Length: 119
Image (cartoon, rainbow, N blue to C red; front, side):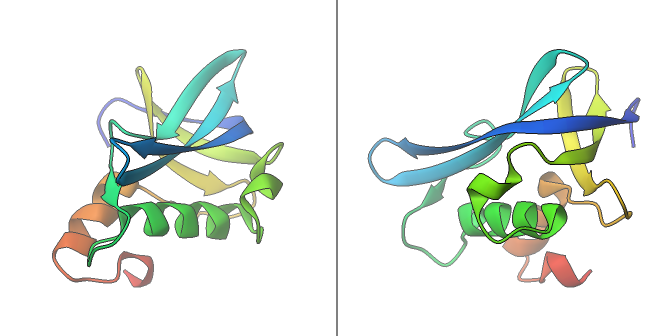
């Protein structure tokens, strides 16, 4: 990965966005050393509420899998590993394993019709 570091962060919030009344996006708010970063969000993806490619659903699914919880609200206060590239988080991982989620990479595979979670 480009110039990046792996560090620990705490999820302090989960936001879901409605964009232009028809697209969905989501982001995790992650605190690292007192600074807050967004992971995901409208700059990364916006999925139509209906459609074949569902980045919104895949993003939430993978975040839930990484944090090991069943509800988005249970992600709050979870400690995770993050890959921090200068001013943004490119990936997250559970604190206890190396099962990383890189949405930029996963979403390219989804567009190609490959199940990223099984790669």
